[in-house]
Every structure is written in structure tokens, then in C-alpha cells.
Figure 1: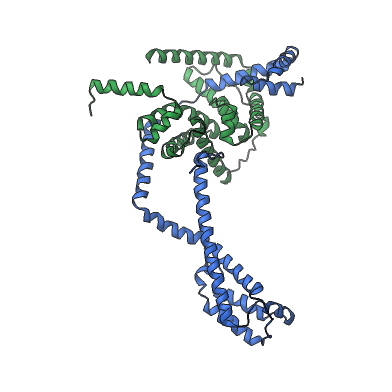
Figure 2 (figure 1 turned 60 degrees about the vertical axis):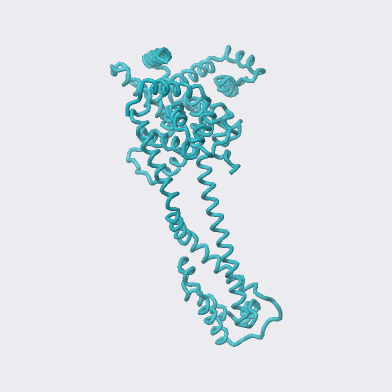
Length: 231
Length: 233
């Protein structure tokens, strides 16, 4: 038996877990190896030192614990008595935390609407000025300021993005224009529908985030084995 | 409020009865709103928790705070405990998570850099104390405790947690597996590595005759105290 292996078994021996078939081999090794004998003595001494130097609790520990526990229980009771306080806080937290996410989602949806909108026969190409006017109309009709502000992208940013399509070279423009129906009304309906879907997705995202927070709190009290998964 | 003699007697009897109850049954009583059962849990666990946490975080004030936080969580989340694991496993899981979070927070905080670089972690065995200079037993014990804590703190965190749960809190390998979420083989090897590292760090102390004498005296005093307590009970 090599020393490394013997030391692994010595550690197990300290916890009364030496495999029965190894005990004899270990003793034989120890009889002939002074280093491993010293190692065993040191491990046992280390254990004794740890036990002998158990730190003592501060004298007023119980009193402080009592005080903190009462404080915690009072706070918990307060939260239960004024649930709306928490709800209000949550609402603003939602805006702060997910405003940016919603804006990004919205931009993604608009991009999808532009590139993968209703297909069919490609509409006849419109003059450049008409496209720019269309872009401005769409931008004006969308009440996006609230959400876009969170990502630092204002209405003018959207305008630039949409009217940018009109600035594309002719061959690229033709391809992009394939994403639009050619009718302002139909496009607005599509965009409104996609906005609705986006809102639903954002709602789901918020819910998922809430669940993650709850699971995190649960993990803090239950550990990686999630002892209370039955909840 | 003055309690009558009978009431004192009854309270003492109740406390004595609680001492006989298993942890898992005590927490059920806590779930049913019995505060005395919680007090008994605090009595059983506060020392073990403080000892484990102090050896993890090194600072007594922080260790006290985290010990209290652990015990408060036990009370507040008592309803979440299910007897699919030992109660001690649940308590040490809470403590370990709190310690880990605190250490993670600390490591994120920017630290002041010393102009005198410390020697490499691996090359820093703890100097033995000068036992002749100290006259009081308590001072000696405290000094020894501080040195052992310093040595323990130098064991890397991932080895230190299973090591302390085993050596200080006497949790079984299976319980440590539940607390840490590690595989059984990993628990075994980490404890083994930590023991080797700890031995390296305290080696100068182990060759110090006066310190070993002191250790024997401390053990003898502890034994005598235990006997006294048993006599009083």
C-alpha cells in the first residue's frame, strides 16, 4: 500500500469507516511506515485541539437573539397587516427591473414584424417619400414612450429605426418591404396584435422572475437538496 | 411576576421533559406554536452553530450575527421542515447557506491592498504560542483557540465546510452530503484533503511540548466541568 492511499484510509479510520478488507493492509503498512504513523498521531491531535478550543458564546447571546426574533416577528406581522405596502413596492420594482426587458422585447417584436410580417405577393414598390411618411405615421400612432424610455430609446429612436428602412438601397428595400402588407391599417393591426403578445410574454417573464425569487428564498432555508419541495 | 413554588416546579419538570425529546419532535412542537420547544432547540444548537460559523468567518461579531440569523430562520421557517432529513441537517444547511452568501458578498467587496505582501497561503503555518508567558488558563485557552481558528481559516472554503461539519459538528458523511449537495465520494476526499492541510498548518504546534501539556490540562478541566454539570442535573 502506498502512503497516499494509506492516508486516505487513515482519514476514513478516524470516522470509523475503514473498509473491512483494508484494515489489515493498513495496519501492515503502518507497522513499516513511521511517517504514516506520525500522520495518524497528528490527525488525532488535530481533532483534540479542535475539540479543546470550542469557542464560547457571548454572555448576552440569548437576550440578543430574543430581541432580534421579536423584531423579526413584529416586521412579519406588520407586512401581513399592510399587504398593500408590499404590493406597491412590487409594482415599482417591476417597472424598474423589467422596463428595459419589455422595451427590448418590443424592439424584437417590431423587428419580427418588419422582417417576417404577413407574406403574399410583394406589394408594388412605393416612392421613397411615401415610405418615410408611412414610417412617421406608424411611429406617431404607437404610444411607446413609457416602455422605450426605460431602455434609453425614445420615440425619435424608433422613428429613425423605421424610417431607416426607407433609406436602404433599392434592392435591400424591396426585400424589407416584403414584410409589410402595403396597407397602413393592416400593418397597425399586426403591430397591435404583436404588442399584445409581447405584453403577455412580459407578464410571464415577471411571473417567472417572482418564482425564481421565491425559490431563491426557499433555497436559502432548505439548501441544495430542497427539503421542502412538497410546497 | 412572581411564580409560586408549584409553578417553578412544573416549569423545571417541563424543561427536563423537553431535554428527553428528539430534535425532530421538538420542531413539530415549534410548528404547533410551542415556544419552549424552540428554546430547547436554541439551547442544543447555539454552541455548535457558533463554533462552526466562527471557524468559517473568523470574526466573532459576524459569527454571532449569523448564528442568530440561523436560529431565527429555524423559527420563522419551522413550517417548512419535513422529516425527510434529520433536523440537524436542515439547521446546518441554513447555516452553511448563510455563511456562503456572506463570504460571497465579502469577496465581491473591494479590499484594501497591503503594501507588505503576505506570504503565500500554502506557506503559512501557525506559530505556536508562548505558553510560559501566559499565566491565566483562560487566556491560554483563548490564545490557543485563536491560533486554531487562524489555521482553520486557511483551509480553502470548499474543503473547510465538510471538514468542520465533520470534526466540529460531528455530522455523518451522509448528512454532510445532504447539507452541501456534494457526492459522497467528494465529501470523503474533501475531508481527507482538509485534514492533511490542517495538519500541515498546525504542525509546529504539534511538536510543542508545553502546548501539548496545556491541551491535556484543558481536556481535564472540560471533563471535570462535565462531571460537575452531570452531578447538578
